[in-house]
Length: 239
Image (cartoon, rainbow, N blue to C red; front, side, top):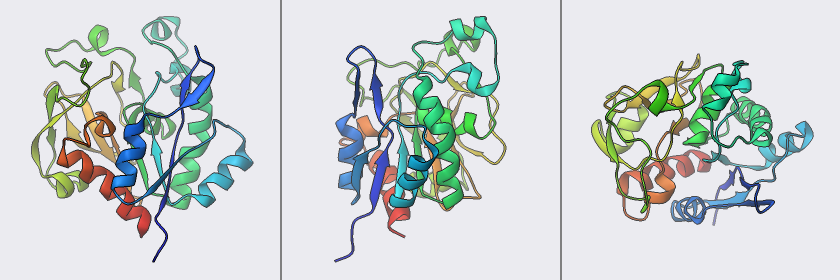
């Protein structure tokens, strides 16, 4: 029987508890899709990153804290003041990990912060705080239970996401206050919110490089499109 694909998940960081951790939804969704999830170490050592990428069959860039505006060359105290907690250790890790994964053509799925990190690493920028910079009637920062839909996105026809879950209106959960501003070169939009906020992108030059702003790791147990997104990653990793 062939081995199941090994899917690395970028660790979540809890400064208050001085710990690395993982939401079970990431592991459960990967496992149910047929993969073997593993939590990666928090490292920006190039040799370790290279070894990890050479070992994995796929990668999930998870949610988490805000991306430091300095990572996309915004050296402005006002911009930093719009952010919540930052995680510069993850910024440094993902600045190496994402390019290494793309160079190896490792299937990659970014979720929430993972979408933002992918965009920043490839040269894009972010809104630091949607309520104060791009106010709209769309609620992007939902409340528990986090698997519940908060708003709809419009999945664009002709995109890989449309082939996976169908084009048009898709109800999604949502828990974020930052979002893509300038989409990075090489990325294409796959879905948008009613207020125009970018909700999903892909990289046509890659075998599989998708990222979504919502949280399929929370909703996979009750939502078929969420399961299909993880299945698409694991299927690409299996290939």
